[in-house]
Image 1 (cartoon, rainbow, N blue to C red):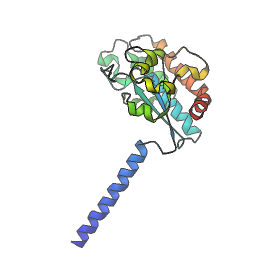
Image 2 (image 1 turned 180 degrees about the vertical axis):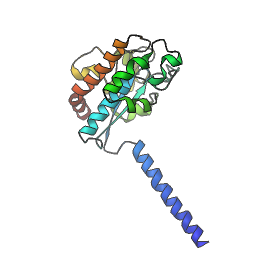
Image 3 (image 1 turned 60 degrees about the vertical axis):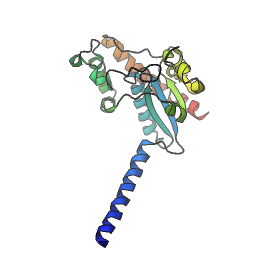
Image 4 (image 1 turned 135 degrees about the vertical axis):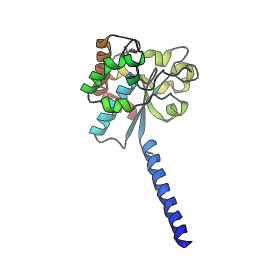
Length: 212
């Protein structure tokens, strides 16, 4: 009986350690700041921005100070219809996508070294909790902020002061338009390259805004 009891105690201890490790990996550190990137569906633009920001943070050894997540407006109360698929790789000709968004995006993601992490992403709906925890909210385009039906201003107006447009990181108010439905391979390539460029060029401005 004593041996069995000791084994149960050891098992409980191991389970506690595992749970603590999982929690540490999924929750922001107490002293870290969360950067939240948002677009319509959390399928393409916001994911690229998230991955590039994360890469730079890792290169600079800032993982304990900053956390980057991305979310989508589709699935929120005012826009309840979630995306058809949870990753861009399913928006392919094989799945009946007229735009063939995946075929037109994959080569550029591969070129930038983002492909492996990108294919592991799962589109996630924006929640009030995400906005509460975020230090700064990055909107990929203007409708994400100001659309009168589904925008952040319409649904979560108390968090508007946290929000800035992605392209403002490099002094532009243009935003990055959604590529969904486009069958133009050049558009998808340029979209990804633009997000990558702005995320890299605007990273120091991002940190300045997060820390001000």
